[in-house]
Image: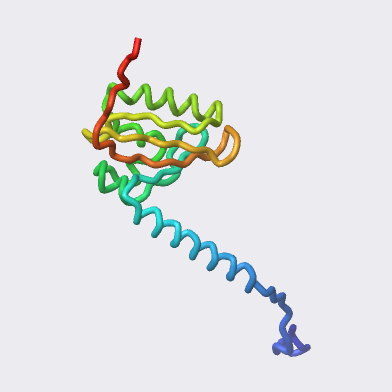
Length: 146
């Protein structure tokens, strides 16, 4: 505010307390850091995807195992390190899982070794999916009893 001579005599403004927002941001950051630490400490490759199969998250174990950067793995890049014979079956299993919402487990060759991919859904399909890849030490074929 100015007086008749143009000198400042006061200020107008609005102040807003953003303490709660800053506390929520700090809590979210702490939670994300705790999740990242936990996901990076397990021996499995941990991941999350959107319902259409686009990657949203991989832990550091994925980067170490595949040699792919997170940027290369984003979107549909998660299918790249699978053996060519296993890429389409992996997509088919993924599509079935996202349509039905059923948890799935499927073996596939990834990075030259057999991996067991375990998929679970956060609720009913379509939903964000999460899962792990675990190295299979021995791949066993069922014996027919007929």
